Length: 165
Image (tube, rainbow, N blue to C red; front, side, top):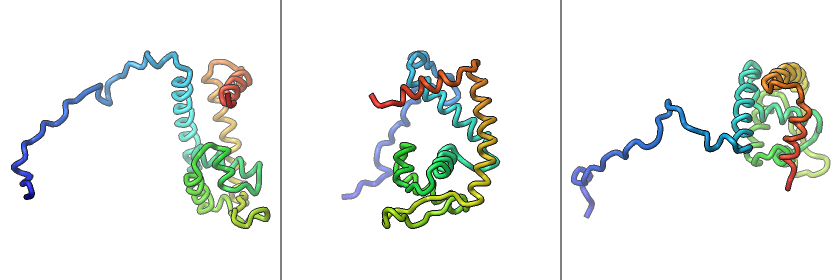
């Protein structure tokens, strides 16, 4: 026999636990973890990149794809995905977007007929030249925020972290 919803006892809403979104959260327990610091830095750097590139409507992932395709004409989506560490379906969406904007084109691969080789178009090369100039300014700003000028040391240390163990 079906239960009449109005005859069910009413549940109390769960008590609010933890700080509200507007409150400060004590992160001191995480503060000394390298991984946490790197992740927080990544989020800040990506947010600033988004602001710097807003007029071009290009995300960090799209910019990375454009650079890789420029430097490696004919790559396929699977190789791009593996190189950037993203899932292939997400890479399909990125390449679709770039292709719809007329920045890249996919052609039948001469190596594997099942694969599509990706190339920059003339508008893609033009945009990438603008992005190169803007990203150089952006990189200079990020290095300034490090309060030091030893970018090479930082990059070497980050590359060591990225190497497989």
